[in-house]
Length: 192
Image (cartoon, rainbow, N blue to C red; front, side, top):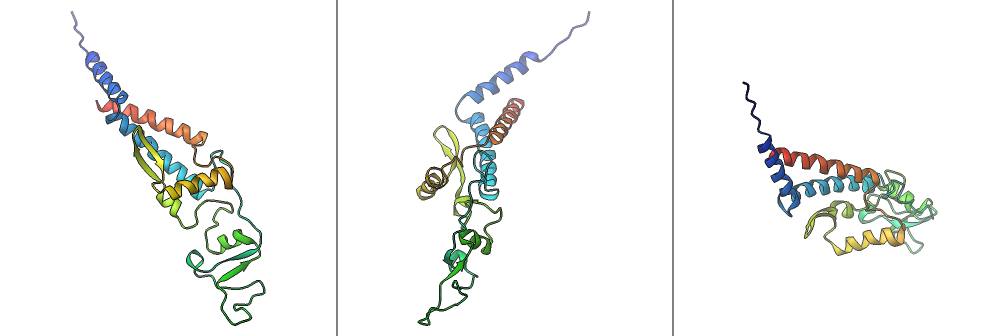
């Protein structure tokens, strides 16, 4: 007679414990949600600030091409001040502090090296991009800004300036978040 023994019952109990750990706040659930949120943060940061795309994967918008004068100080440092006719001084002899761009804000952004995609990418000083981060919340993890000023700016872009969803995950990003969650849940179960 042959006797076959398995550890199926032990494996089942271990997997059940791992699943129970995932259903409780903190612990494994916290680890999985954190990794999903971190992946979403990376994806949204790349899409918005590098590619200049909204939540539908379309361009956020276009920069104005209306002619105007723009700063040569701060972020515009390195640009020489020059008026519409090419002069660098007013008639009274005072130096200009701005530069005229016939192609407007779009031309200025190009001149300072910040119009890399040819459309809006919400990345002028880097403040919004650099402060877009992962946060521990009462119900898990989230992404956003710690500064109320930046939160308001982000809301303004969506509701007033461009009137479209920018910060929501795209369908592709949602699928990626689900994929990461499944991988992490599988890893959590295998660890037990």
